[in-house]
Image (cartoon, rainbow, N blue to C red):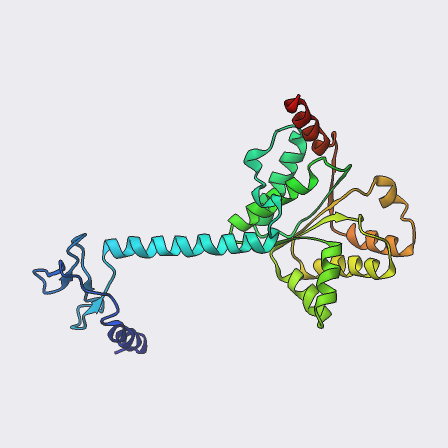
Length: 268
């Protein structure tokens, strides 16, 4: 008797009695227990004709087991979604709700999402004026990653600063952000300029690059800001960032103002 077969038999014997027996169950012609609901076996002899009898899942229990697995998976996804967005309105971002006003942006972001889900490690920077949909499209990518079973985090530099103030172990904050499957740094460059904030930005970019994982950055910085950084600290940050990042210029009118005008017109 092989060691593998012996081990399997021991595991099978230990599993005996793990599956409940219902009043409607019955014993078939082969002497094995049959489910009275779906009429498929609850017992079998799996070991090459040997006398050992073990419980097995009937069809209706397999369906229940699959349903339970799907429910657990859905709950895990929703926990990841909450961890990523908190109570932000971006929790409802979805490519399916895209208004189609910027097809090039939509195509770029969908292709990026597919690369992330394929376990590549791309970087994407969405840059342009306020209200053009950069954060929304970045959130759509994050939702796609979460739906594919990845973890994600949507943060701003000031939020990282708050996290660092709360935690005694500063390195643990960066480690946690570099562990998630996809990191989105929103409104990069909008925070106040201090040596400490510049250090946070560099550590975020440098640590994420070293992690080898994908990242999205949204920013209102311009081509001039990238081409001619205002000081050495910003030059250092941008130099590190452009080692990897693919850029996409997001153009268009401020959608927030457009929505305000629409609401005002409806009230007239």
